Image (cartoon, rainbow, N blue to C red; front, side, top):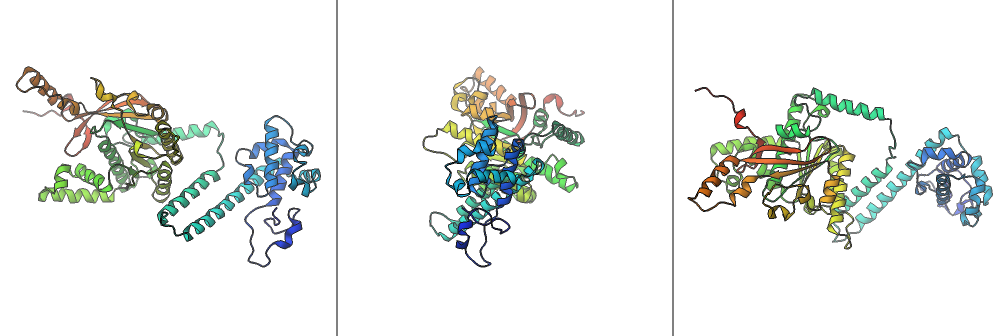
Length: 507
């Protein structure tokens, strides 16, 4: 039992052992308020309707005095069953409770009823109890951090301890937020109207973040907040290239808006957080330099550039360095660590768009040897969707496709080709596939100097530099195909100019 209240006054608990507490001004008890707990329990016993005000956020574990927590739990259970919670109905459940007997048994329940507050004050006391519980957990985390820091174990570097402490703090922050519960629908309507107004005021008429690709923006209306978007494809289709293009286009739009003095909330650009689990940050930077400078990445890797190329490279590097683009290339990152780092970036820099390359390289946080891979992917996709909603931003996650595509004559991917398609398709708001027919056509070259080869060559010229983004699922709009231009040398996707849209040139 505990003997001190938050004000330091003596109360019925532990009066028998008060003299065992350390003397002196240095002794401090953890934050708590026995009086608030007694007043709230009294309110519940006098008027069971008071439970409606606190049951949505207050739990038995939030009470400092464990007996009070058990009493609160019993009251809520009785009320949920449609029964009445009073000192009379509770007494039989606590007759043999040692803590209750110490305080006088049923007499203490009657005393609690006498401590009742009005129903109007019940939520206030519940919030106070909840807040004090969170403060106690903060103290516990701080003590654990101190103990861990003193344990100088070779298998536990300081960076791991920081990540562990940060994860505990973020979990506590999530738990510390009282549930929002129901809210008037007029508030949701107002938010929807505000979003539509932003889209109307933007030149591109987008309600979300721009991809920098006109045809894709027309189909999606931009990348929407709280959405999980899956971009899937077979190897060599250009998944990473497209994701990088989209992310940097959004970062460019953000810079343009900043330069024009536009409010970030009304801009169609974004502050980017790119989690690259497959490629290193240097490799990703080389791709960006190639795309922005318009120099083939192969030439950059070999250093085969001339003076003009170098000048373009310097200019591209300056633009990339100024972009709001953050890269984390930690391999085998867990979904919990990714969420923790994303929250930190959101808090420190105003993160507004996340890219994950790619989904199957993430690890679940609770994996055990009994779990199968489908369950693990399900946890990962649910975690990414929850992160998108929590931070109110779009999350673009890349995904591999199964080999079933290669076994069909028609190589165009479909939803059933997604690895672990059930969980990915279910959790995603948008599912897109990258498809380049040119890649497969090159591997079907017939014998030269034949009619078949002539037909093959004509087809190759027709599809050269063309790519398709197949929208297989979209909650907010239509599905269909978006046709783009793809430059293999610079791995750059762009808007496709069809022959009937080419500008007229006079003779």
